Length: 173
Ligand SMILES: [Zn+2]
Image 1 (cartoon, helix red, strand yellow):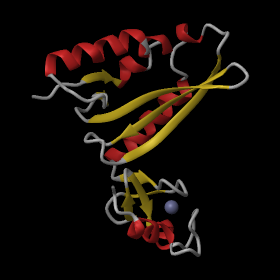
Image 2: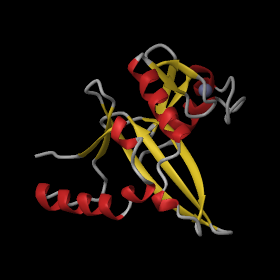
Image 3: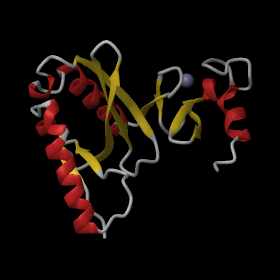
Image 4: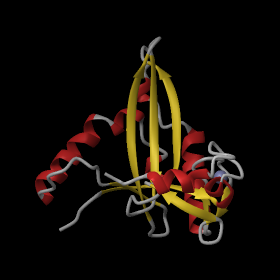
C-alpha cells in the first residue's frame, strides 16, 4: 500500500512557510499510521497541474547570526534523481512563519518542472540544462551529470577523469 502527501503547485504558491512545519509534519505522522510506513523518508510531492508528480524534501538549517536557511530539494516522482535545490533565508527574529514561500522560489520550481516535462534536466555540477536522454553522461547517487562533467572536460572534476571516475570508485555501501 502506498500513500503520499500531494501539494498542487498552485496551492503551494499560496502557502505560508509555517504551513510546511507543524501542520505538515502532523499530516506526515498521520500518513505513517495509516500506511504502516516504518521509515522516515517523507512521501511528499508536488503536482504540476498536468497530473505529474515530483517528490520533494523540505529542510530547515539553523545558521549562525540568527539566519535560518530553508531548502527544498526537488526530485523525479520516484526520488531516484534530484532535479534541483532551492534555497532561501530568513531572519529568525522576523515573522517568517507567516510569510508565503518566496515568489522566485515558486517560479524556479515551476521552471524546473516545466523543463523536465519538456525533456530537459539540470547537470548537478555545472548547472547546464541538457536533454535528459542525450545530454546526460551518467549518474552518481541521485545526481545526474552532463557529458562534459561526466568525462572531466569541465566541472569540479575537470582534468581528473570527471564524475565517471568518482562513480567507478564507489561501492554504494
Ligand atoms: Zn555539467
